[in-house]
Image 1: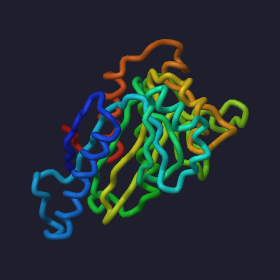
Image 2: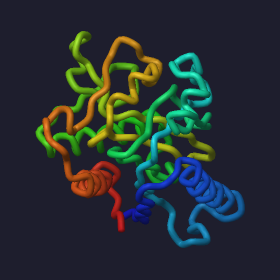
Image 3: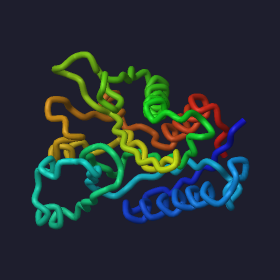
Image 4: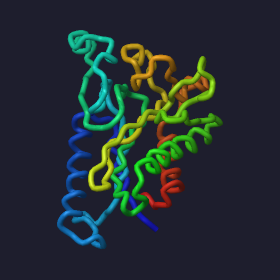
Length: 232
């Protein structure tokens, strides 16, 4: 069975986590460039799953619209909220305490050479995780993410956002699942560039604070199921 190494960074600044995953991402690419397809990278591990959370920060994808940030940079500074232009896909989103952020550094040549398959698989991990709390997570056709009441235009709300980058079939960036997230931050942006739908969290849906470590364990186990991989 394929194996991945779990790296739990805990609460970490967005820039530090970005630098960490970028270093790992680049190492994997260099290993592919200089070794045969059957060789493992220098660290002996082909895949990594990074889990963490960030202090309050807005990030925007490489093709995102900065007009979807509804506050001035000065106000952001006054509120001590960071802002980063990222090299991932997708538009603007929020990261903060009470979220589980996942950065899989996977080599898709060991899985399937299909980005659409990869994105749907990430969504499936979250859908299975939500199901373990009695929440029905759904997809919206042609819109990346996991939603609640996806087919109801008046009440559809996103609970998990996704944005990735790939090079030579190595992945980075990933997903952000709202667990106990302060949803007021989403009023400061047009989340993912979608103005006609809301945002929610597991806490919001269940009406009580959730054990974030339990959610994390479910995510790990569901990665193993969906990707048919052992994570340790």
